[in-house]
Image (cartoon, rainbow over all chains, first blue to last red; front, top):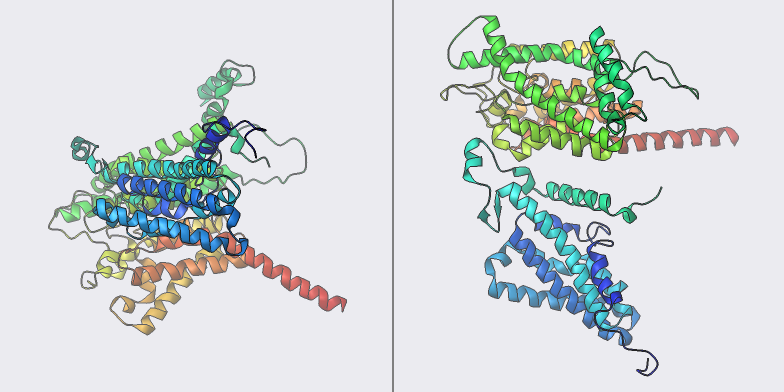
Length: 218
Length: 381
């Protein structure tokens, strides 16, 4: 495309902003596409690991999307999956090393789940579905949008699980001691994974209640 | 009664179409149906007429539960006074237990029916009697000292996530009463397991462990006699201790045809056979517990009679019922003997088989189709 025939699209055009907005609500990776559930169950018992994992996924996803988008024209289709995996894996190792260097305790809590970002179906899915056919800038926005859509759900789930399960937020006691003296107890069930699934279910319920276009007609 | 009918009739026009409280008609219906049989009948299309409707089914189960409930109330008192070393007369014990139980029952019904009416109102459908039995089952499967707010939270969880999200009464996958108990068991384990909770206001020096609790830690010297376990004068959840009272309930359910004898029988058979297998193996003291004793310990009988036979969550096919019941009995005893974290396996076994019931039905039906196809082929060839 030559500059003379078509006007350059502004960086934050409505179309580009949509790439960020849609995955947060209408095509949310967790609540609508039901991808990446595994980590949503595993790391959401406390807020801090959930936020760190969210940030890691944002970085990994944005960068891999851009890299694959840059490579897209020279990538032989038969080996594209392997190349995508290599890109994601290198990013994950980078993120893992940074976490180990700067927030060691959180990295310990997340343990294997940082490494498992490689297998997060959302990332592979976006590389295949979007980065392989779009320019770097939209690919970057799409990566940010999907990672945010994923992260928001993770953080909401973690908020309720930490509040109800441990009575804390970011490890700070928020439920006053008077409640406990009165007989209130932390809910041990919320700490277990099944409850994360139920919280995700409730989020889906609320989301569908307010977003009519998500309801299938049958 | 007449005055009540008049009152309802007088208010009724306000809640019908065009009335000023038209939007609240679901809530009105629910109050009316609580006291009277609605006068609505199906007017077109063919349908079966039968004396047994959901109201009658539910009230029969309710009646079947009464012996175990009354005994449970007396037993709360009996255990309490036994633990502090007193021996008052029958009515003192009964009313002690009665006033322990009453708040739990009120909370259970209050929260459960409140939520049912709320959902009926939002979804604009009739309130039905679905919670009538669950609301009584829940207080009967918890310890007498359970904190009331925990009962409320568990009932809310069970009604919303055990039932309403699937579409309400008759659509649930797992038994709502057991969902409530499982919720309590995992959420607040200190209030529903161990040896502190089963006797109301006991002295600390008195051991309050249930037979299952004793068996789990391998302490068989403190086991109550089989007669005590059968009669039910042992610590435990309110309704589950007396196998005798549960059997009276079972007779009522079987004579009226509300519960299916196949499921009930196979649950007991499954538990018994699993017990026999363990007797043969005999690797530790728990495995050597006589097989029949498993059937009178803990909540086995209660689960077999009142929980496993739930027609909504169980299997629907005749053949499927045998598998379903048998597996519940086997898995319950298996969990008891093998898993040190869960002294009672009945709850988990029933919930597990609830989930698998549709699968069992599917294969029974698929097998039937296959067999008949084969027969057809043999005939045409």
